[in-house]
Image 1 (spheres, rainbow, N blue to C red):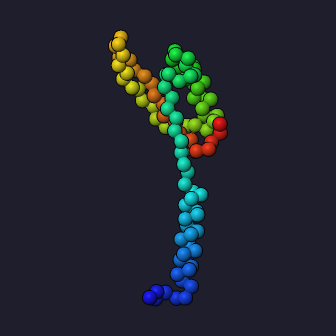
Image 2: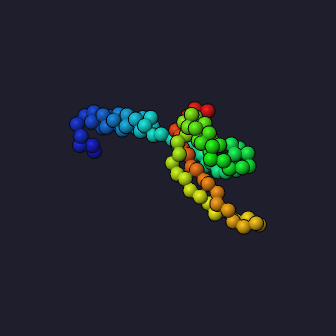
Image 3: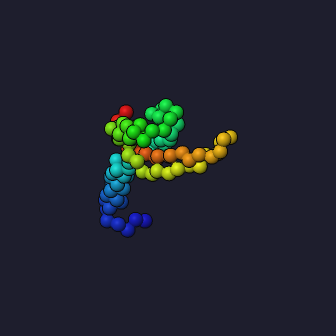
Length: 95
């Protein structure tokens, strides 16, 4: 048996529903993009100016850089370092 005052259980239920709706509207779903030297912006040849243009272009679509790293890529002619940029934005951002 519920020892709360009459209507208290319903008030709690309404409050829980409201909190759930608030949570749903406050949760921001992110999407991610990985930019490497093989990206279409570089046309097979890495160029720092093209990197800047690419990053500015993605920024205008709502992307922001969250991490930068280099990867050690082995190949037949030896290993090379490749720049890797991770970006994120709110899902449903500008296209």
